[in-house]
Image (cartoon, rainbow, N blue to C red; front, side):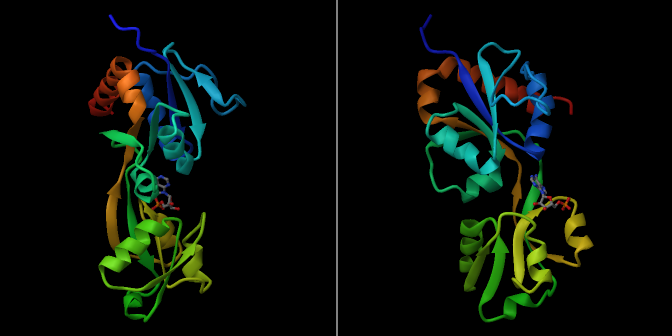
Length: 215
Ligand code: AMP
């Protein structure tokens, strides 16, 4: 027997990932102790006495986990690709919230423009993607509704998440290129993996079983 600490804090990205993570967590025996739509509490106890959850903006999940504010996180690969730090492990693909990071434009010939203006929330991934193709870009950083930018002449194309493609179609945009497939991943603080090893591995195994189980 070891005297390892056992309490784990799990940070989950708000929105689609949270919605899709809830049934998976329930299958792993973790049910929030509060109504998430109503509660104002920021730290939510769960049916597993050793696990509590915090629900934060996607882009904050890696920060919480890297600096130990949370032991584990559930967040999209898009957010991880954009995050600069590397203070965590990424041991598990939950395969929820699937979508793709794609380039979209009104004009399929946009790449012939001398200096592309690309509107995106994903500046680092976008810069790298176009640099690999030898294309110079001016990144126009936006925080939401990227699809609007080409429509009002703010950008030549966008880099954004696409799922059904309905948002692009509804706005007359074409998906020109897929950059990569995206799903939600579990990340783990590096120190947690050492100091709370047994309980962390146990939770990861339960989550993996839930992710592999019947939908
Ligand atoms: P869709 O119309 O189904 O292609 O969805 C596109 C819109 O939903 C875009 O505004 C995306 O930013 C957003 N979106 C798509 N998939 C995801 C996801 N897995 N997580 C968060 N936002 C997403």
